[in-house]
Structure formats: C-alpha cells, structure tokens
Image 1 (tube, rainbow, N blue to C red):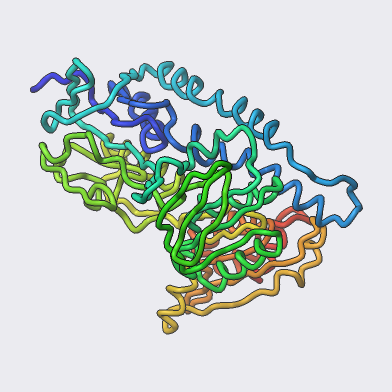
Image 2 (cartoon, rainbow, N blue to C red):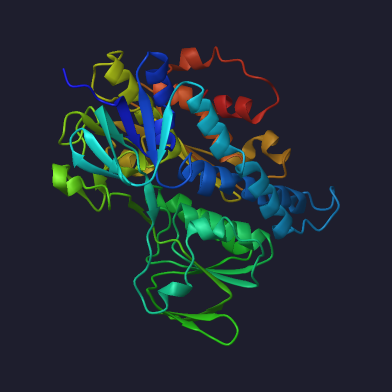
Length: 444
C-alpha cells in the first residue's frame, strides 16, 4: 500500500473545505489545507460576513426613516465608522478558523497548490501527497476587458472602502451589484447601476426583481437598462463611464459583472480533470474525472446556487462519503437564498418560473403581505409573497419581497424540505407575535 502524507488534502481553506474537514479529523484521518490567500476564503473575509455587517447600518437607517419621526434622527450613516466596525469583526475569523482546525490536528500549508499527478500537489518547493484531494478553491471577481479597466474595483475592494464617494457607478445588477449599490445609496452616495439587460438577478422571477428595482428607485437609486459599458476615462476629477446609452460620471466604479471559478494555476489540464468557464465537472458523488479527486463549493460547475450553505453541504457530504457514512449520490436539500437589500428578496425550493412552466405539477398562491398587521410593527410599507404547492398541496417553494423576506423563507424552509402536510403545519405553534408566526399562518 502506498504511504501518503495525508489521507485528505484540501486545495483551499474556505467553506467548501473547513466545514467537512473536522468530520475527517475526528474520525482519525490525517488532513491538511493548502491555502494561497486567507484562511476562511471569500465568505468570512471578503464576502457574506463582511457584507452583512456593512448592510446592517442600511437596514437600520431604512427602519428609522420609515418610523416617520417616531424614532427621531436623520439616520445618516458614517461609512468610515461602519467600515472600521466591519474590519474589527472580520479580523477575528482567519485566526479563529485556523486555530480551531489545528486544535483538531489539521495542518495548513500556505502557497499555490498545483497537481503533478492524481495524488501529488506541488506547493512552492514542496511536494505533498494525499490519498484523496478535494478542490475547494472558490471563485474570484470577473473583470471587464475594456479601455480604462484599471480604474475599476471589484467586490473585495469595495468591502474594504474606507470612505464613501460622492458618485458611484455599479456595472452589473446581480447580488453583488444591487447589494453594494443599496448600501452606498443608504450612505448618501449618488449611485447609478448599469444593467446589461432589463432583468436583474438571474434565477429570480422578473415580476419580483422589477418590484425590487422599483423600490430601490424610490429610495434614490438610478438604473440604466439594456446598456453595454465600453470604456472608462480618467478625468481631472473622477471618471467618465462610457456606455452604449450614454456617459456617467463617477468617483468610484464597481465592476460587479459576475464571478469566475478559480481553476487557473492548479494544473488541472496535466492530470485530465475536466473544467470549463462554469467550473470543474463532477459526477453525482462530486468526483472529478479522477476518482480520488473531488470538488466542492463555488469552483464546481452545477445548477445549484453557488452560495456558502451549498459549499458547506457539499463539504460535509464529501467528508461523509470518504468515511463511508453516506454512499449515496449527493442529494441536495432546498437551498434558500436572499438578496441583502432593503427590502430583501428571498426564495427557496421550486421557483415561480419553474411552476409557470409546469402548471400540471404546481399551483401558485399569491399572498397579500401587507394584509398582515404584524408587518406594520417594523414600519413595513411594501411586500409580496408567492407560495408554490404541488398537487397534494404540499409546499415546495416560496419567494418573498419584504424587509424580513429572509426570516419568512427560513421559517418556511422546513415545510419545503420535508413536505409537511396542512395537518402537520397546523401543529406548529410558533411564538406570537412574531414574523415567524405570520409565516406559518400564511400556509394555513
């Protein structure tokens, strides 16, 4: 039997790796991470965690303004203080994750890992071998290839921006584009969003995304639809963003045109691992073309949402598969997703578009969110909810636009995942009065 340095070696130390590694270490497996940037990966350092800390100020401001003077104050956001708070909290994560893993006997090797063969990774001048390898390298920001691209910033830059600009242009209307634009608008910045088409947020129903954009427009955001960004010109003060529909001035420009799988520099071609611009190809067990090499998280080519909870689920699945605890193909649960704007947009399970395409399988029930008195407690003024049922009247999907959409979808998620019947739902007696009580009440 070949003696390897490790039983399992992870390329990357983000959620696609560190959520599953403790299961292996606790079972006596020798485990290591190869990490070329920060321990924790994108989400704790430059993504979800950083974003939600910064966005919290915007949500508080929106609620204060909506109180119509009941709570006095202007609600002005001090962006510099907001960013300082974010940095203070975020700085905890890398060391906390690393020390926690090392406490379990897991090693860290810093540098870029490149395949030499199915079991050997080159890291700097060191060669490391492993019986099994898990590629969990995530994604990075796409960058527009246009004249003046050097003046563009990505989401990592934005989430470390110490001072708010006066004018900002955001190119792209996905999660990152809309969330960043909404935060800056709340901080008093004049924000223009350049949209490639007339549709924001791929994967969400257009009726809902149009309603979200309309709400953000009321708050002061400007959206330029069906526009191609062609050039950025540096001016004596600021920049000119040239597009197919006009030119827009900015002090800061965010390129939010998508994310790209981190497949370069891994030596995948040398060992025959299949990948394309969507990510690494895997089978139903998350194995690559090499049966001892797996891939998890955002680097995987898949139809599932590329989100932190997806990476966590996949990481734990692979760990359990390697331990023999789960020998079945990966079976994804309903994965909830939320856009952290004010209002929020969240969904889980079967989508509205899927339901509309298969009316023989699904029924859609529209709910008047603002008919619920509890929505007035937090000064909500708008909202809509669609519930998707199968023909046995079991909830299989939901989408909501409101200030508490993420809480509603989280409350409904067990019903979606486990197929609760109306009789089972009636036995859920939640705390009253709460938004969760309202969520279950919408199903009955």
